[in-house]
Amino acid sequence: MIELAHIDGGGEGALPTIAVLAEKYARLNNLEAVEWIVHAVRCANPNPKLRRVLERRGFQIQDVPGYGQAFYLRKELPTN
Image (cartoon, rainbow, N blue to C red; front, side):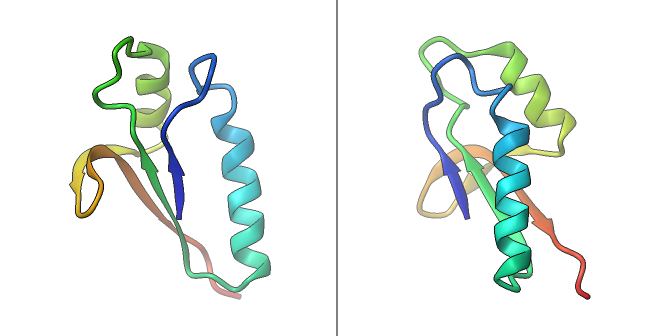
């Protein structure tokens, strides 16, 4: 699980790098999926660019149990 709460500078530039690292880690450890929770729904100063990037990658705003409303994505990894 990747949980992002605050990234200085907006986060849209760091997201692809974090995604690559997370998927590599998951594959090396034989995990089935990478689950993302991004707390960017109710920011004081929302970044519209980050929202577009998240939506383009398939994130959806959901009420995540134990976390509240957040952008959420579960990316299943192919099995070998």
